[in-house]
Structures are given as structure tokens and as C-alpha cells.
Amino acid sequence: MIPVSHDTTIRVRYADTDQMQIVYNGKYFEYFEVGRTELMRARGLTYSAFEESGTRLPLVEAHCRFHVPARYDDLLIIRSAVREIPRSTMRVDYDLRRECDGILIATGYTTHAFLDIASLRPIRPPALFLDTLWPNR
Amino acid sequence: MIPVSHDTTIRVRYADTDQMQIVYNGKYFEYFEVGRTELMRARGLTYSAFEESGTRLPLVEAHCRFHVPARYDDLLIIRSAVREIPRSTMRVDYDLRRECDGILIATGYTTHAFLDIASLRPIRPPALFLDTLWPNR
Amino acid sequence: MIPVSHDTTIRVRYADTDQMQIVYNGKYFEYFEVGRTELMRARGLTYSAFEESGTRLPLVEAHCRFHVPARYDDLLIIRSAVREIPRSTMRVDYDLRRECDGILIATGYTTHAFLDIASLRPIRPPALFLDTLWPNR
Amino acid sequence: MIPVSHDTTIRVRYADTDQMQIVYNGKYFEYFEVGRTELMRARGLTYSAFEESGTRLPLVEAHCRFHVPARYDDLLIIRSAVREIPRSTMRVDYDLRRECDGILIATGYTTHAFLDIASLRPIRPPALFLDTLWPNR
Image 1: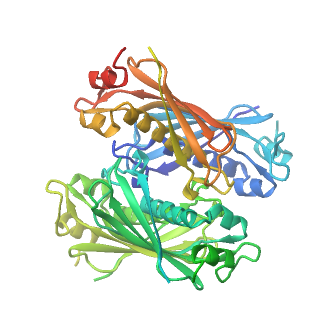
Image 2: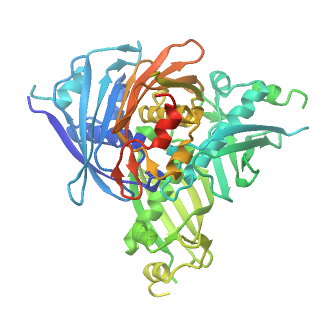
């Protein structure tokens, strides 16, 4: 099985900075969100469509290691990767690099449950999800 | 009819600042939200309870004038006031002052529609709302 | 004199939504920031470079009118325009439209002072600024 | 040596929620910030005063485990604890509980470097910091 990986680019906003003149720590988790959203879109399943099918992907864990501060107006490349086919939970790994020089800004991961909205219970990954992301698993 | 007014206090977080070393402009609208939430709670109707009754108060307009920048760790007093009994929309006025010296930081207002969640249509202010906020109107 | 105008596109993030399932009101002012940043970049002056020249553009006023709610994953076109050459302050007007159907989501403006960082005093718009944005004024 | 621990209370804002009707994951790191700020204040050293002495505490790592979702208007108790006297870095542990029933909402930690602002280099924890937080170490 080939890991699913995708690169997307974001621009740091003024709103993302704090008075230390670097990106505020909590903002990186928003960047991770953009990364996994675009990974799903690139594989043919928007997170919107996935939600409409009745499932949510709430976080059970989040982690970030801050290597070099990102700064205002930096262009960042977020690489998001799912390295193992999810069973009960899904882990997504991220690394953020500065576009201009490739410097590693941050690494992290998020772990997600599959939640059925009707029953509010955790479920196995739906077929729609697995078939779209890993058609040849 | 006596205007409904309420003071509440918030502390500026590091996350609220930007690299200009002042509070980011968009954050003031969160402070306004805290102000009107606490105004409603002080009058005996939490916004949660109000939502559960089937109505929402989405914004139709928001305005802020920034007088003196608020800074990290400032304690701010938000005065929220409803000066006229709402008919189709409700206007809430705010002023923010620094607690330590009373300096005026910002003034603004938000205008809200009353939205019925079942029909997704604007409605007149519900009796629950008017009776709690203006019992002697 | 021809007004300076620019269109840029943003995607609504999950983080931008609130439990009313629409974009939180304070977020629109971040979208406005993206709009004016990209307007300046398109004219050849990044806001970073402008800050390095010793001037800041703090807000003195902000206004937004919410027409139709923006929702998760919407692609929005922000049109930012400066309609008059700034003298002591600069006003930027915005309108946000949904990319898929052109529906008007929000309109607003921000007014900015020109602040000299060395003296912390308001100044006239620097030549660097005027010459780049209005070379033929 | 007795660990330094402190409880502080925050109220979940509407702005903190997302369309899953729970607090957005990145927001928990803001709550952690409030926790460690108030821990320092309770020990007699505001983070502002600490910054003025020329040191910053940027994050090198952040982690959160989400147990039960926090919701709009929840009152949360953040317990922040430093369990070991910092040497080169400082780790702060957090747990968040719902005030009404003590339910565990989230646990996490942040790890911080001590950064000298003049040299932009990591330093040992300053005496001001250690003496205030651990006067009898």
C-alpha cells in the first residue's frame, strides 16, 4: 500500500502572528487542517461531501514540534500524509516547510476518530472513505 | 424604558496580539461577543438557553472604532448596552475601557437579526427574549 | 485617477466556522486583511517591505455588513479597492462574493492611519507608498 | 521540591466553536496559554514583567489529547502544573475539566525554551524566573 501524501501551500496572515513576531502556536493546527482538507480533496473526496455522508472526523490527539518560527507573509508548504490505512482511528502526519528555502518549520500529527453523526458513536472507516483514498488497497 | 446595560471584564491573551504588539482588529468582535453574552446572562437568559428555544441572533452588521490599542495582558471592561427595544433587528452598543485607568480603547456596535431555526426565516423578537430583558416594558 | 482594485480568492476553513454552521463574524476582518495584503502585493509593494520602511497601517475603523452567510469550504472572491488617494488616512473597501455563483456574501471597509514607528506618530502617506500604488497620480 | 500548580477558569466563547458544535482543536492551545499565564501570575511573576526582563518562552512542542468535547458556554477549569524545575527547557502539563461535573475534557502539555531577546539564543532559566516560581528550591 502506497501512503497517501499531498502538498499544499498557505500564506501566513498578520492575524496569525503574535507579539513575539512569529506565528502563534495554536495557528499551526489550523494549517494542519488545511493540509488534510486538501489531501482529501486531491484524492477526490471533499471533507464537506464526507460530512454529508453522515460521518465526522473529530480529533482525539494533536501534536506539534516547532523547529523554526514561521513569520508574517511566509509562504509555507504543508505536506500531509496518511501512512497507514485507518482502522479504528486515522493518523495524519504533517511537515511544514518555508517555500523560499525549504527550511523545516514544524512537524506534527493529528489522530482522528470516525464518528457516526446519527448515533454519535465511533465507527469503522466508511467504505466511501477507504475506497476513495485507497482505491487499490 | 430603561436601556439594558452590563459591564464585564476580559483579559487580553497572547493569542490576541499581532506583530504590531497590539490586539488584532478582528479580535475586538470576539470581545463584543463576550460583552453581549454576559449582558444576556446578567438579565437571566443565557444565549445557550435562547438558542435551545429555536432562535439564533446572526449578525447583519458590525462596526468598530479603534481609539487606543489594547495590549497583551490588559484587563478590559466591556460595557454592552441595548438602548432600544428590538423590533425586527437588535442593536448592541459597546465600549471598551482599560481597567487600570479608564482609557477608552474602542467603541462599536453589532446589529442582529432574529432567525427562526426551523424555517430559517427572520422573525420578530420572541416573547421569551423580550420578557426576560425588558420585564417592565 | 483610477481606483486601485484587486481580486483575491480564499477558501473558508473549518476553524472559521462556528456552531451556527456559518463563518464567525470576526473572521471576515481577517479576510479583509488578506484582500488588502494581496492588493498591495499586486501593485508591487508587499506589506512586509512597507513595514520594513518604518511605517505601519493600524486600523482606526472597521465595518462589515453580512448579506448571506459564508460556509465551510466556500471559495470566496475578495475584491479590495482604494477609491481615493489617501491623505491622512486610507480607506479600503471590500466585497466578498461566493466564487461558484457570484452571490454577495459581505461588504465592508477598513480605515487606516499611517503610523511612523520611530516616533509612534501619525504621518502623511510615505512617498514609497503613493509612488508604488499610484505611479501616475 | 513541590510542583507548581494552579487552577484557573475560562468560559467557552461562540468564536471558539466550529460547525461540529464543539470547541475547535486549535483553541485548546489558547486555553493552555491562559492556564500558564495565570500560574505565573499566581506565583508573583506576570509574563509581561518576565518579557520586559528580556526573555521569551517560545514553544518547542505542544500536545493535546481530546477526551470529551467542550461546548459553547462551558465553564472549564484549567489545571496547569510544572512538575520539574526547568533546566534548558520547561514543560507545563495541563488538564481541562468541565466545572459543572468535573468531567475530564482534555489533557496536554507544552514545552518551552528560554530565549534571550538580545542574542536570540536559548539560555538557562533566568534567576528572576526560578527565584519567583521556586523560592525554596
